[in-house]
Image (cartoon, rainbow, N blue to C red):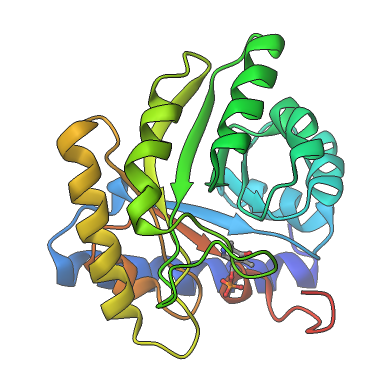
Length: 236
Ligand SMILES: *Cc1c(COP(=O)(O)O)cnc(C)c1O
């Protein structure tokens, strides 16, 4: 593992792990309760293999075609689908994903449940909630069910034997204070646990705001840029 890219990824990984450790320590939390999901979108499968060799076990992607190819190339890790999901991609995603973080409407929960059942699998699911002031859910935006719709969607997921409700996921709206956004998310997560005590995971935190996410209880960080470097802005 002495190629220059592996050396760079190792340094990035160490820096991220230090940030996670410092944030956990400041929050009085255990590092082992926080899973680092390396979001490898736009980067080659070779980078996935390099990070896997460095000990990363969880990878995230936001486009089915790209995810499917990388999951085929590097199968011995856990794959998380974190992007907006179209109904016609559900069967494909169920074929490689261990978890989907972006279930934000009943139709997706129903389709994923059907495909998981057909595949004889149990798929882990986060319900994505919108923290946008307007309530979210409009096509073309970041996605996420409006907070008022969270409970019904979570009930639907929890009631599907082929799905396992892990908890909630959100993306902090750009230009807002992530501490405010994740505090609201933590409140929604707590409300959900009142009816679904097992839904105790929280997918929150990206390269720029992982400390705030850890302060508010994140268990799954989705980290791209800080691990892999900048993406071409035109692509995403
Ligand atoms: C790209 C992406 C990330 C990673 O973002 P970075 O800022 O590069 O760490 C996290 N979550 C989702 C849903 C993404 O699409």
